[in-house]
Image (tube, rainbow, N blue to C red; front, side, top):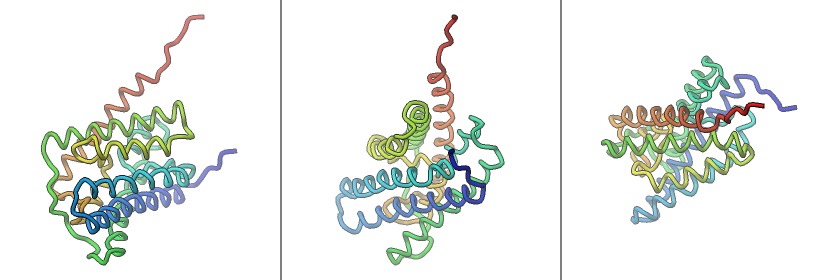
Length: 225
């Protein structure tokens, strides 16, 4: 029998998973920037830990909460009626608080102030479009994976984000909670708070478009008998 976890435990899993994810993104960015001045090499040092930790987190926390760690993903699951709207709202709150905690954890590990507003500019039509593409691909990966290879979803998501770091102009935030958390670090992975609205709107649009496309694509054609 598949275990069922109560809402407090599911919220704790969402907060914990998002915190560890953000701590990995921010912490690996700080480490990479301290080890090399080569931006491409630093990005690689930021990319690989992020993809790897996603595989781990989705594997160990997915059975508890679904391992969304992302308001855009929780929105899609609410639209699919796999998650109650009231629970989705609480999921989003847990994800945002967990993400902020993750930034603080990374800063503590590297001896930085708990919170530092980023001054790294990430804005403009190309960046917003890239975020929409990143979120589209993430949601499409999740929905397709659930349908055809559910046991492989941790790997599919980890590999997709690893790739999307490199083929999107925005380096694939694809996650409003993570974007908010990254606005609070003035390090390699940061984003100016002023640039958040454009990223978040683009991520939500990309997720919604993916939901519409994949709902149509994955619906089998009925056959007359």
